[in-house]
Image (cartoon, rainbow, N blue to C red; front, top):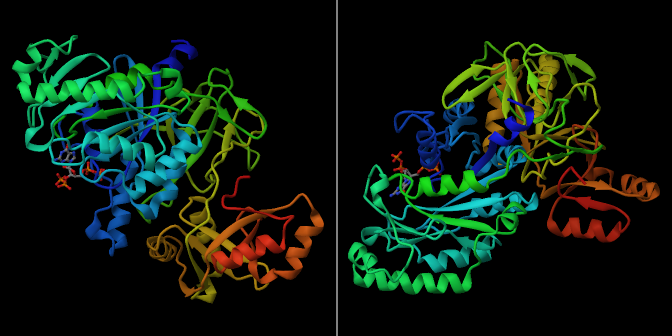
Length: 526
Ligand code: G4P
């Protein structure tokens, strides 16, 4: 098959949601459609159970499981679909943000009873910032929840989306009868825990057809007609171009656990979701159909077995063909590298691959050569954009608790930071190291892993910080002045970029006012 045909065949996306909305269940149903798995329950939930929040080892174990479910591929209607898993737990939000750099579109799952939740809002914001096309699946229609119109309102106000309902529910909870498919113009009847069969789909092209009253009852039919009338007046019809630009969001209603409404969404996804898209680098735009191979690392997963300190670097192929046992150029360290066991994940199975194409994700065994954001090419020097570090929310000084092991400690910190577990800032005045994380959990994870994987011991010491902002200025003198006046607030990150550590929102505001020629950035990419 030609490179062009391989590209056209692929769709790479991520499912995002607040924990418990039904991401794992939906993923599993999608894999069942694709025949990638045969039985329900085959996809291990990689979500971090609430009860385990106090036990970080459990969380690490569960993260271990997530290696297998990091990328799941299946074939459906002649397309190769790659699902990238995203942890819903807020302490791993950075992992999710980075994974979203490797997708071309996203599906957002919302629980009908809970409506739009905090984590959904955050993740949708990240996608919107990148103009990622998004489809929304409103789940758990077999339960009582918010009214359909109220949900569409929430989607528009809280998620800033332009809603375009493509299915519409007929009742909900006990009274849930099915959905009307505005996209295909047919009624889909609901059977609880049903294996949805084709016969459940009844063609009704004319809403005034009395067949509708027979099927769902006169009252429900009258309500549906009225609601659909309102929908067609208020909401736009599907405009694929607007969806591709991230300006219109198709909405589906269903129940993942009952496998209801899932196929309708999947069919629409296959029709409209974009094939692998171009990627920006600092040097130029990379088009997928360029013959020369390029790819970037967006996630690094450590081996949970302390005896094998190797890691898996997940790389998204951006252009050309990636081949096994072929020399490629590691841009950051200027070395040639080849890979004898590049891996792809088909549901829970790992396979060694000979070739991979744009949109595919390959797992590369790594002994410490990769950092998040690293590029592999056939020789061109490229720096991929859009994989920034975000300002952490929690900060602590890290101290060496065993002076004989400072080398191990530094190596451990370096490698864990390359993996993206947390960020380290070295203060300009004292040279002390500060660890910044998104959630409190990572502090325990770092301490445990330093001890068990690197033989180093650390302790933490509290520090009251609000934010770390990367600073830049076109005026060298202004930066020099900031450095001389506020040395105690300045540090460098792992790439030696200058960072301002502010104690509070107020001190940050003051610093901005006092240094008008300096720009304070909340992400490392500007
Ligand atoms: P997540 O990955 O987004 O965190 O959610 P997950 O799929 O694990 O689903 C969270 C809970 O919601 C699960 O129940 C799951 O069975 C349930 N669920 C998913 N889809 C539907 C649906 O369409 N209707 C209803 N009523 N429930 C749904 P659980 O009790 O937390 O876990 P389990 O014991 O069922 O695995």
